[in-house]
Image (cartoon, rainbow, N blue to C red; front, side, top):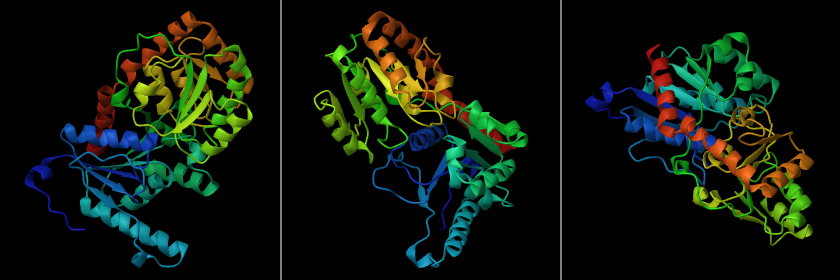
Length: 374
């Protein structure tokens, strides 16, 4: 992998970003937006991904992308052999690029980054994006995370609870950095009256548990004949939800249109937003809805992201994970009290100043440059 580096590039700080792929997801979007910001503010950026998947975020022009997955010719036929081949290839990529800093996102990527940068002189920063017990899902992974992270130049988490997962030595070096708001959601709050829709956005899978929203809506649907439910997103549970809605007699009032590219425009006039997950890191979809000023309800799920965003009853509602009755009650409150919901939405929209992308991306850049300098 021979690369020609210009004289101007030699004087630039060079940061390598590493993630599995750029599939449509919260962590991936944060990385792409961060890459764009870093490049625009004078940092040389290289993206390394293990592979390319079908539906991906577009990488900003001018940022090279390198694949670290082993080719069929490099495969050995054994799990250990393939792991060693991946390790050697990724280590070779890092050493040949020899950046001022490597930033990796998520689970195994963080462990591989720390292994592959050991004794290279390259500072490595790792970022835990979700609930640590889920991201490091077995005893071996948890042991590696709780030991190898001590070797990192920096550790980025999203919540206090995520930081508390680690032993004291790692907690001491860990920092909490916000997720920068997607620029598309930076806009004035709506002036129109809410339109009666209950909306949710995210991958339609078991963890997101959109079935909980459908069941809660079924409880109150007869009380609010003008209300409807719309869930934006793709996933393996989508067809199942469509069938559930049919059985509940809600096919005309509960819609699952799949993925959409213009989410801010689609949800801005909604009466309520719901996040129903079993676990989350710091949920981007909830941040976005609140910054738009939509009255929002979320499960109080580990690792505590929604709790750090919502002051219950003031700028949103928190409910226990899986509590259908509590969700139905909070939806009833929002739909029956338009003035109270308006006050709640205005309070939620105050988060916009904290999560403005230029402000948060600058914090990430300052932290990464500090780790590189150390």
